[in-house]
Amino acid sequence: MQTRLVKTIILHPRYSRAVVDYDISIVELSEDISETSYVRPVCLPSPEQSLEPDTYCYITGWGHMGNKMPFKLQEGEVRIIPLEQCQSYFDMKTITTRMICAGYESGTVDSCMVSCFLVTKEIQFSTGFIGFT
Image 1 (tube, one colour):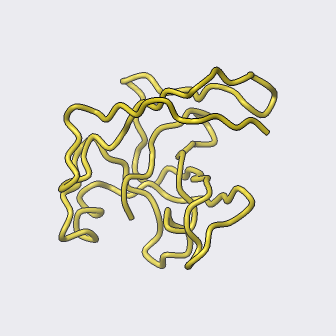
Image 2 (tube, one colour):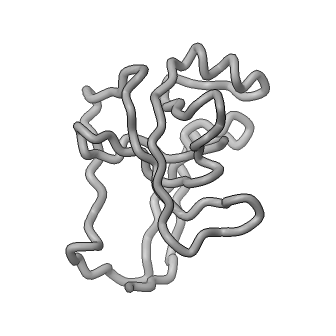
């Protein structure tokens, strides 16, 4: 296991807390990480790559599970939902074209259960980050 302190957090200059748009930051660590078979840089997709509705992806992370945080990394499969359909689920939030909407109407797996990277089986890129649920 490698532990590092956060030296600096740089928010996106167009981040909007009200809309949760451009919800991404650069985190500078106090020291470099050592690349291993378990610790590697994340791959990001090219601008031309996009996720079509009904594509299945995985979300992983250590997000809240009820009122506690899990000890082990959690994983769940979710389906990409069209932005128009997603907007109907989130009446009070604005869904922009820079966002990816994924999950199930039943709520069986969502980013309240696990949150971090969204990765497809075919592409093997991190294609999104959880902004809100």
